[in-house]
Image (cartoon, rainbow, N blue to C red; front, side, top):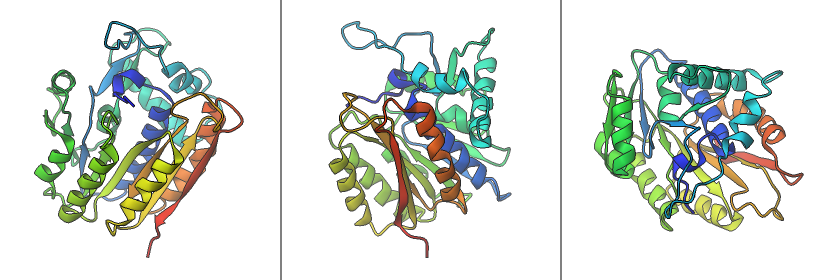
Length: 291
């Protein structure tokens, strides 16, 4: 599959990923000491939703954000604090990019979601292999302090910057899944990360297209002898749906205290707002329990 960020900006998977990312950043900031936020597959950083996503051959894709962020943006009443916090951040990004009316035009990618939350003592390292996306990312963050952008493979980036001077890191591994070896590449990246900074908090995003592939990934992950690891998944449709990607998940290594409960509390809201049919649901639990 091709999960290049621009093609799917603001869709249900982005909503899920970014709400959880914000919970992780907030949890890291319960301690005064600064940390490194590292994004292995940063994309462009932010997206103009009015620009069509064009595929090879000149065909354009239907936008996916109306069924994602659109379901929250257009009906914000009664949302729990985590989702209200998320909407406030998206609105802040939309405004700072120059939106002049109530409609949502600009959506933040993970780099801007994190940057808008980071404190003076925190910093960012962003990696993006695609030359055009890396150039756009570098331009977007050129005036931002404590941000580095490198046009290299994100798994190489893990080896290049870990361990950081702060000895604390929040890592997002969010690849495009253009390669059949992506799950194996993730495991290789995690192996390197655990050698260099075993206590890092790391969130790994993955699509749920076939349950068997995800289960195989989880089993292979356990062979790394990982630290305490929590997983959370949402599905927006049942097995009979024609949707190719019916759900997605996050694997979270070394989750900060209470984050598992915070994520579990949010899961029913994702399903209620984002479901396509009655087969929607959630899964969560500890792959490696806390000691």
